[in-house]
Length: 72
Image 1 (cartoon, rainbow, N blue to C red):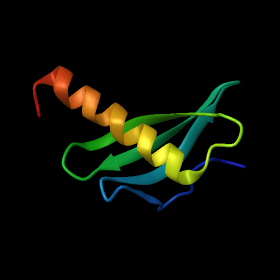
Image 2: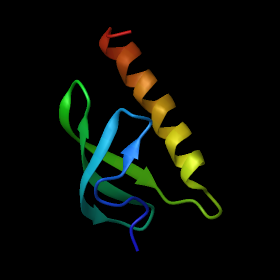
Image 3: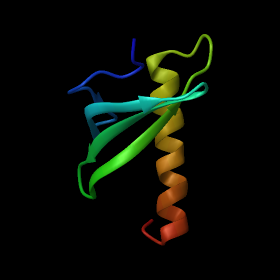
Image 4: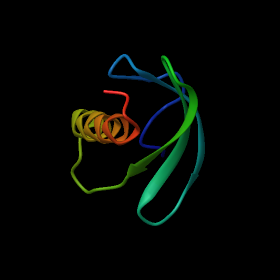
């Protein structure tokens, strides 16, 4: 069973379009960012993580990418 589901919204920024694949430690999804369009999102598997934990981790990663790209 995938960690995220099609159509799921994450922090009102990403919409999950579909599951792309998985490895031993993570699952990859095609998502649509509200402003940036289609992207891939890797969600790492961790025992005991809740959906809220996943959303918070994804948001902080997105903030890091924006800072690195100069889009603060």
